[in-house]
Figure 1: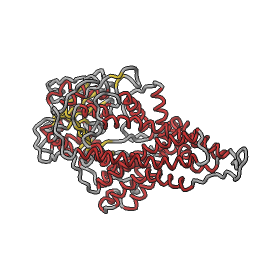
Figure 2 (figure 1 turned 120 degrees about the vertical axis):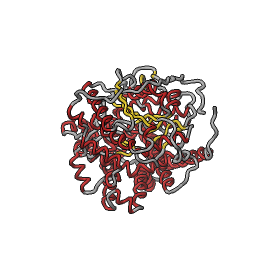
Figure 3 (figure 1 turned 180 degrees about the vertical axis):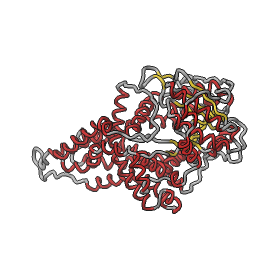
Length: 631
């Protein structure tokens, strides 16, 4: 049945049209300036390639720029008529399962996160409406034994709190998506909603309850996604990323939420999902062909959000809802490994763009997920062609008189004004979104204190911008390799993600970044020899690659990260005013669980590990035909 339109939905089309017109105008203007530069002294095939690649790269960049501008305006106080219904007054009537899929994880860290969640839910009046499930796909028997001990200890510590259940699945078909599907088919009928956590997720009791209230107050909502804040890491690499996400991400998140509203994206965790709708409409297909572009869909979240919207349900991003946390990889290598998995998963989404019935916004989100990784090889190709053009111009003597009769010399055309304007526009697109996020904090004395004060905050911002500029070329080469490997049919294994402050050895740094360093050295020396004027334009790229090994290794040192924290750099509000759920988790990590320290032994598991089954069928819909609408 078709639902009635919400008040304010008509302006959604207007705001998106205006947004894309502004993006298009910016891209056209920058392309016009670049075309004048490229064509000033003859448009060769190489310069034409530079122009095309610049247009593609700049358009992607300017989309993020205007999203941040929009988010900044929204955060200044613009009221949005298209939003979730107020839910603070809702008294919960339905039951919600909090599920945590795990796979060969660090059991002590999982236990600490669960302890923080259970301790919070025990203290709220709404705890009886929630059950907690640990859904293990662990293949290591030693870890599985520790998981049983963890469940026993947590049950003993919280006998009157949220009920904790444990299931170990063998074999782990379908990875995380299959793990969640198994939960739904066995127990989904007993719950109206599920809140999905990752093994490193932490959410406050207030946030968990607020999500359930929002779902009950908005029956046409299928997924409500929070914006997780990165916390808990101590290496310089992770601390810089935590700081950047905490300072800059809000303007991007508010802009994205304003543009998408009920057609948002799902990150795969720290979100609440309507189980009946998910079971009926969101079962994932197995793509034809072999991996990496065929087989099981690795990045399931964007696809599930698209299918939920295809069925007529809303998918919301709620940046104003705090109390949602996650953890980042501790070093460049682990960060890149995670990116490799996401790259293969996102590249699969290109095969889903033609699925009948998808919303235009869903197709756009899937397309942008694919192009987010294609931008790296495009950027690399742009730099290569720009280098070739610079070398050709440096080696070619100017020709003032063409063959035949010439009344006047053919003087080279100067394009300094266009180049300076392009440089200013590009720098603004790169750095202004960050400066807007910083401005929101700088404007408030109390906010500045949460980041360590004015001087440390300014110093942190400056160092972060330099670090990001040095990191970008490394990730460009990593992601280019990922894209090429995927297109060549090289699949990956989906292993457990390291979730500690793992430092890199110099040997590992040389092994992982040795080729990048050689590329930077050869590239830089060649430009310096053949086109010295262009050397300084390329020096930020080549210097970053030359410094890849020491930058990667030193930024993985937790001791250095703690020293930076001690002098006040990269401090976040979660450190200066630590939320109670993070304090609970840290106390649990220090205290530990007795059963994990002393072995399992004869443990009293406190009753059945799983509740009585309440089955719910997952419907695998065809990719065409009628699929129904949300009531």
